[in-house]
Length: 113
Length: 111
Image (cartoon, rainbow over all chains, first blue to last red):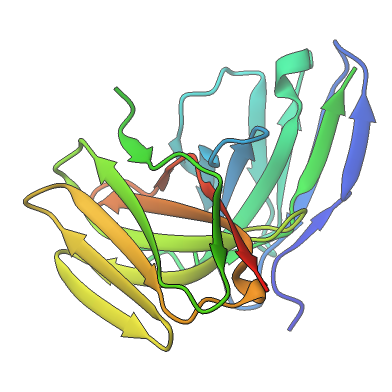
């Protein structure tokens, strides 16, 4: 089992551009959550997807949007990139009834220049 | 005031030392408490998971939760250089899916 896989691992974008990050959950998991981790900070919850719908959302602007596909994989889209969007974006997968995020991917390092 | 505060670092200890890592929180609705270890350029790895108050031990790691004081701790016995990493506390309440993380503390164990 490959666990949670994210792509790409690194990305450099220009301010104002749009970016799409991808996540494949651990086999058997049906729920995907996305977190943003700025340098030197703890991860911050962006949103969670279950049954192809956004189940809960953190305090992030509408520029951040997502999608979950029937195979449970997920995308995170960020529009109109700002310098402050530079961070490590983490995907976590779980079963909907679990109370913790046991499995994180290694993240996508996004740099906005 | 942030919902979760974690002791600032970095922390450097000699190999074999007992390490104590601590977090405080302000949201009394938090019921589920976790500690994660994060190596450089990696995602967080779940170390310990505790529901409500009490102690939980797993090998060299012990997690403590004191809900009356809104305080959680992670103890590492016989620390090893391989324990050198950033440690994050995280918690959630019963109604919401999101985890709220502390800022993290970087631990260095010197051989």
